[in-house]
Image (cartoon, rainbow, N blue to C red):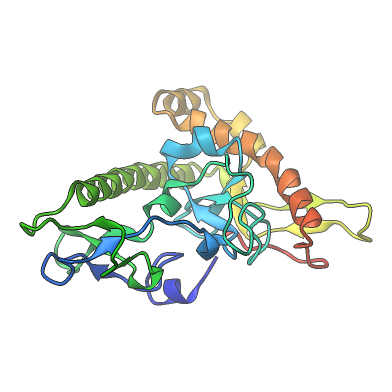
Length: 261
């Protein structure tokens, strides 16, 4: 899931970040996101634990590789393939759950100074959604104060940030539990001479989960981890559905491995 933005320290989808300012953007407006074309080549989207219950109905939930795993909703099984977003940015089906990470775009909270914990509302200027437009929702009123639109955006980003902290805590404890391991999924198709093998992500080892001591399971049940683990495991049955959609859309290259993070 690496991108040029990530190489510069920016998260996926974001190409740049600029702090929203009443001085610099007093006359700016925001247009609604009418297309998800920026997502059409993105196969894995970060997910918060608050969304597991909704996401498991639509996407396989896996974890990125590495010592600091991140939950990911798989919208495709190989880089550059998204089976839910067409080339022109239309969502199919339009009832599919859209992760909060995507709905937050082009905004996000970010620390402007590494020596400060204060976070500011920033946006990606390359999105084309904010500017000195004739139409759209104003970001600041005539008095220079944030409009309700901007206040609601800030509140959503703050809620996302808190959900992100809960997600980081869960992922950290899950990694420390020893239950996560590098995953591998093999799918056989009648038109392929060999199985398609998918790697590059982490998943919970069900055998290790069954072998946990009673006190460990009780703790996971009490702090909510067990529910989230089961949501992850149940969602993995959708991997075959994603594969079949890729086949139908002609997005399955011959014999490849995906990278989940």
